[in-house]
Length: 529
Image (cartoon, rainbow, N blue to C red):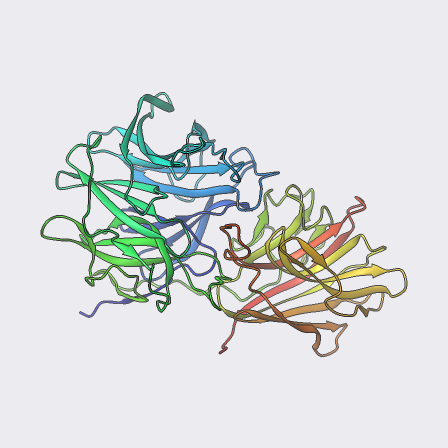
């Protein structure tokens, strides 16, 4: 029987830092969500080929309080594992990341079922980020994480350390044990520990999460080391080959299938122009083997990520495609929607006050790290369209609502309805590029009071064109075609970690909570050059 082929990336759009685990014949991948709520998105597959969004682990503010978290802070590099009927999830809620210091509290939640309910968090430590949990064959559990060293003239990425976790006491116990300093690639992070045939294999991410990213392997007969570095490292990288479609390959995690095969999931990025990965960092998968001398290797004999990979010896088990249109007819938001930093609750978002509409109350500005009224979904295709229909009656210029393409508080493009003293209710485009706000992208268009308006954007790789329809009129262009390269991890000089979202938002900078009603939202993948 011919095997199914896996097409990479398997999780398109903003799905970085994948952690994969198996429970019976089901496979799950958890990915970083950073400042977006709910935290830790979990995908499900039964064949490693077809994947669906299944759930989120962190759905309550008591589990994840990100109000005030900085851009690209919040949830970093979760680790999902399964042992004796219990799912374990380790995650970091990054509170600071710029300069010498990083404040990185690490937590553990558990659940008997992948769909929850997940427990209240157990605080573990704050000594570094990217922690994982290793379940040894003797039943003991070990936290594995990188150690952050803030001191001048020291290696900030100070190595990988171990500490035992007690399930009975719900805390770390015993000494912190350094086990690995990393290779000459440096920036050693993202550790995962595995046991196979008497070996402990340590998988790490090195080289930084940009274009020199890589996966390295070391091994030891003793969990505490010393660890021998694979002389053929890196086992996976895109560095030095800009012709590869999958760039930034690194931050990997292994899974052993129920058919006795090995696969590696890893993050990657696909630039649209030069170096700009507008979709963010994505998740891909590679088939692996263990060589005769018992080292991990890619099955194709290279150390480069492939677009097409042979799937495991499992029959195809596809899932239905998600609906392109959301008419907001359900009492809760669809699982694909995310909000910024805070949960969606009735204090600012309602699907009940006006059935068939999403009502958002205007709150803080697009620059806020606290209480934005923004609901958005990931852009997952280079070429796509998004549209919404809305009703909004602003009373002054501090009230705005509309359709936004959003990377973070510094970079977004926003087609919004507002009020002008001379024009009255009007429509225009505002843009922020590296924190520089510009509302002169195009002339503002007057709108009739009381009339609904439809807003639309068509994205073709790095370019976006906005459209509008007032009342029941046909679509008309508004503004020029805009370059979107600033909505990427790679712009400007500082490093960011998320991806582009498209959605709806409302601001009321006067603090009177003016509401906007959205009738529907439609996201479609389209053909393009």
